[in-house]
Image (cartoon, rainbow, N blue to C red):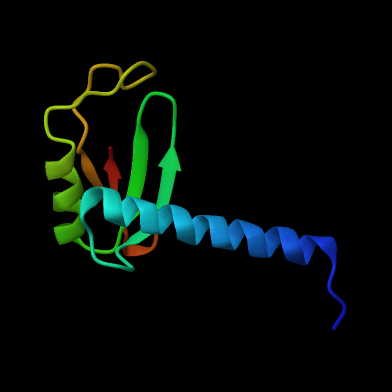
Length: 92
């Protein structure tokens, strides 16, 4: 099979996604494989985790912090909701 430039871009993005998820797991003290997604924004971040236990650990880590700007300005971080494909979404 011929390799194209898109294959390299896709591989690099997947490596970056894995590195970002590993960083988030370390930041929040979670087990490897607990983070399935992480999105960094200017006002707040979101993390998607595999279990409610992991979601509660993230919530505890951001206790008493608030969102800075945007639609959720001033809202407490740590809100947990059911995300996509059974993952739990936490504003952090």
